[in-house]
Length: 172
Image (cartoon, rainbow, N blue to C red; front, side):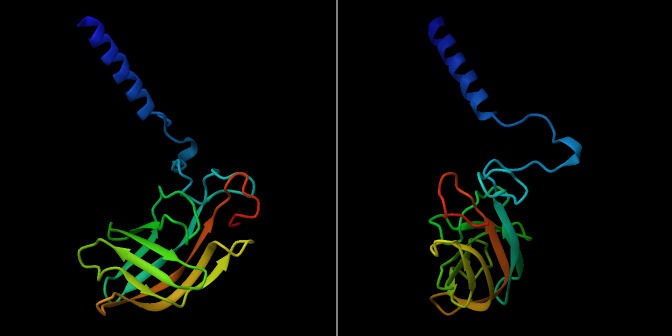
C-alpha cells in the first residue's frame, strides 16, 4: 500500500510540474506578459517573417452594442481557418468571427442579448500570397440571422501569421 501511495505522489508531482510549465516570475521592465499561443502582435511566436498576432477591432451595433478584439490567448491564424477567431467584447462577452476570401462574414456570440449567429457579405479582404487565406479585412455592413434579426458590424482586423516551414502560407 505504501508503494501505491509513493507512485501516486510522484504522479501528482509530475502533473503539477507539467501544469506549471510557464514562467513564475513577473515580466521585466513592467512589460505585459504574452500568451503562449502567439495571440498578441508583440509576441515573437512565429518563425521567419516577424511576430504572430492580431490587430484591430470590430464594433457591433443595432442588436448588441459592443467593441470586439481578438482574445489575447487566441493563437494566430487566418480569418477563414477552421478555428474561427475568438473575440472578447468590452462587455466581457465572447464571440467569434470568420471571413471568407469572397468577403462573406459570419459573426456570433453566446451573449444573452446578442441576436444570434449573423451572416452576410461585403467585407473587403486581403489574402496571403497563395490567395487562399484571409490575412486582413475591413467591414461596414449589416448582418442578419436566419430569422431576420440584424446587427451592424464595422471595423478592420489583421492577423500576422507565419507558420514555420510553410513557404508562402503566411500573413505578413
